[in-house]
Length: 158
Image (cartoon, rainbow, N blue to C red):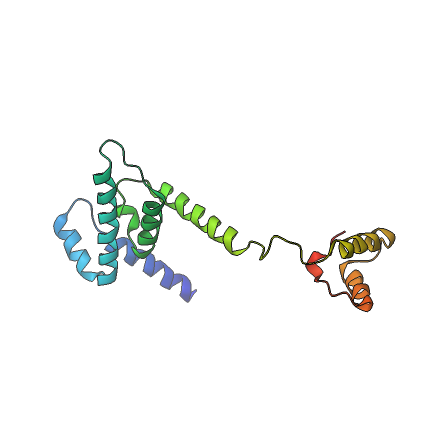
């Protein structure tokens, strides 16, 4: 209950301190309450968008580096949706998801393309699974350990 009240107060405070797009004076006053690092990050986000616009006259085209910088800078700015002018917030979120997918794909890839166990061991595992329908992966692993073959449980599949 207390955490919900604090969360509600935090959301109200964030909504109240969002810079107004209509009043320059109100926006300046609200900016006084924001941290210096957040203002610096917002300025960097705006500068990056200006650099993109200066490079391309008719239609701005973002490179992969531009996309990465915009995503990283937007993460540091609480009011990043209002600081975006050349891309939609949904586009920036899509870029963030794509970057996360690439990062996850990179970190979860196999250490080496070669299988860790020999083809003979794989054939033995398949034969044991076919001949013993009621044995699970743990039982097959135990039998392989008795034979002196060390095999990870993840590699045993029927």
